[in-house]
Length: 89
Image 1 (cartoon, helix red, strand yellow):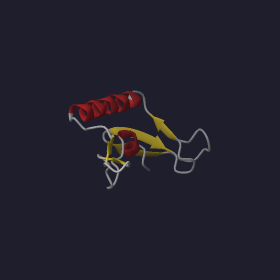
Image 2 (cartoon, helix red, strand yellow; image 1 turned 60 degrees about the horizontal axis):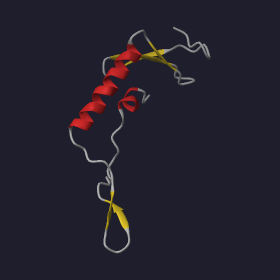
Image 3 (cartoon, helix red, strand yellow; image 1 turned 60 degrees about the vertical axis):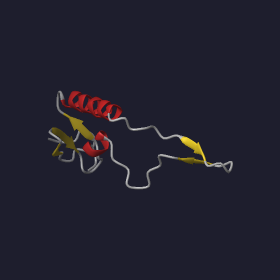
Image 4 (cartoon, helix red, strand yellow; image 1 turned 180 degrees about the horizontal axis):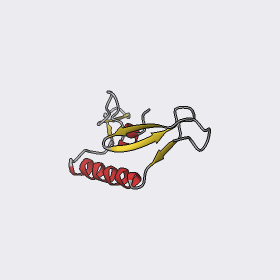
């Protein structure tokens, strides 16, 4: 299949059971029928799981010296979102 933008040959990739056609030249992404619905459904499921796990939101706490610091800061590698994982080519 050809890219409708630049006429390059599209490459098919499967990520987490979702087929994604993308153009390696312009990096355009095309989904087959129903694939966007799968992405939305999984994103909503992941969001609900994060809320159910009781992850505390980041908030500031006084250090007693007139300074504030983030008590829940994370200095490691940030976890990618579902969409970031799917479309990371």
